[in-house]
Length: 269
Image (tube, rainbow, N blue to C red; front, side, top):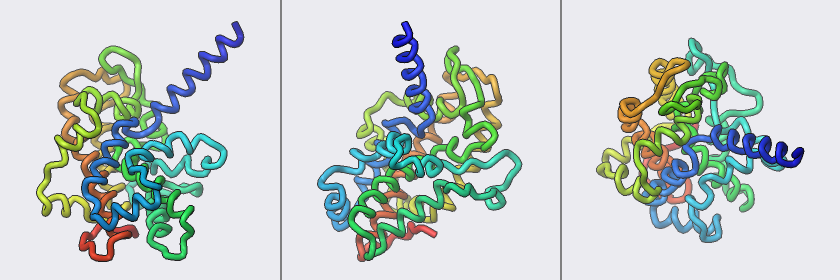
């Protein structure tokens, strides 16, 4: 009996840990796969060499698990930048343990520095791939007081849930029952000029943009909201937009690092 209770507790804890991640596994796969479609040949070769032939998609979700292990516990706060209601983005105090913007800039610099060891670059690439998804999930720029929506309860089609969880997986999965390749095929259809415009800016710019979306999300979903079909339809275009932004911006960052001939503008601070 004790063993059964322990198994139930562990299972619930594991489920919560997965719910607290961003975009779920498929969302991160979508972001990484979109990025792969926009790498220049030179960048694709460099990425393949660092990842021993494996793809960005293969490693897209790695950090969600790694952050819960002793070796990478220092990255737990790197997935988000929580800012409370009423605090402006630029006035928000920095987390002494790090945040997603600081981490993305640091990973970018490691990858661009010729003095970085290969092992440092491999790790930085895996981390940057994941964080490019996280920074575009509204609840990763959510309120500190409710842990990015984890403590904002609501009903999702009649079942108990919370704001972070529905943005992690419930809303995207209700929007489209697509594989990650189908997501890319359907939403990655901007002209070259429009895609280049989306990919400009810095992690700070992107976080500020996501923070503004988070404010809209909180206003739309007060505590106890009952989420149903009309709410899914309302937010589906935003989900598509954010996944596409993440993929295009990740590609631009990597191209700017690995391809000297690349003329894009995405950069880190």
